[in-house]
Image (cartoon, rainbow, N blue to C red; front, side, top):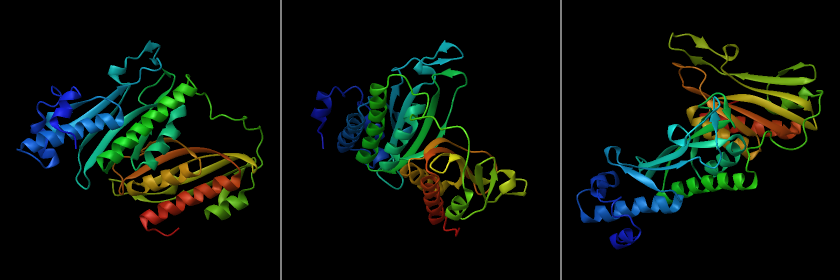
Length: 320
């Protein structure tokens, strides 16, 4: 554990002058030991993440912020200053079930979303939403909301890995990619839906060489109305191309505890996540929707989707 002398040597005296006020958040209120433990903890967050931060006494939170200044972003033809909405931030505080908890929002370009998501998921940090905050932004910017509980070192180290991954991507490719890469998919469709349905355990619909499977579930709206598959509460997968080189796009309808297992399964099979958000308000149980896009053989894609469905079923305890 660092001493208070070390903290001063690190230039932290002013930043931690009121650290004792935060002692209660870490269970050490009212002692000289509190000053040392809190100062050391917060210094460690900065050291592990590589980002300077600020203490917010009112909520006993330590917050790191990193503006996206590596690329200029225009919104409605005006250069956007990071201060008004283009900064990655992560806030830490004492956890209820673990030493620490975090919440945050990472500013990512399109080609950063899935590599960064994998870093976070692999490190035990949850991804809770992916969506846009602007319209007419150039280049397009997305926001990845995160959360988690665990040890300080594990959480902060995972945040550092995610930030480093962004830096590596931009070092290798200064401008965001405009596609997923590789040779464009050839025109025309000739998908054999039989093996897909067999793998997913659900029948589908064929049209012009394409194939689509839709799996419904049911929720109750606040009006007391039950809504299901045909009202939009469904998981679906649409295949186009050929069995040897296909794309799949679709949507998973998941309950909150199912989200992380499904994300991990899809990313493990190299299927890209393109959005995580809600489609409804007032439903019971609360349902989230994650949209995805993948490319490969129909067998590989359907196998990954099957694994995600199985992970979802294990989490929910429901038989499929």
